[in-house]
Image (cartoon, rainbow, N blue to C red; front, side, top):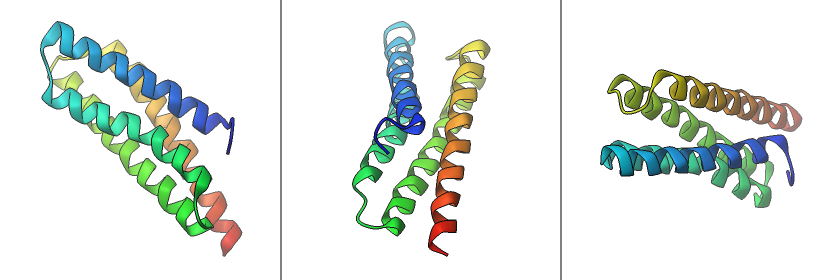
Length: 118
């Protein structure tokens, strides 16, 4: 999975999440929701990276499945931050689009491996 689009996109997304959290801390003094966003938004890529060294195909599927859950949770925190006016709609739309793209890629990767082992 080295230099894969999924790994690259999740890493770039994590950088964007770190930058959003920095703004939330500095401009809004918001720490609780942003901490959750930071955790889930950066975990997506960390788990994808970890899957490179999976012990088996089932372990690989498990790592990507947990990453998928983190991506879904990230979408939740982004929505909550938008609906509480901590981030604007344009910022939300951009990040939501990117995390939904990661979700689609993760689902596709998981299904591909599942089909290979059946």
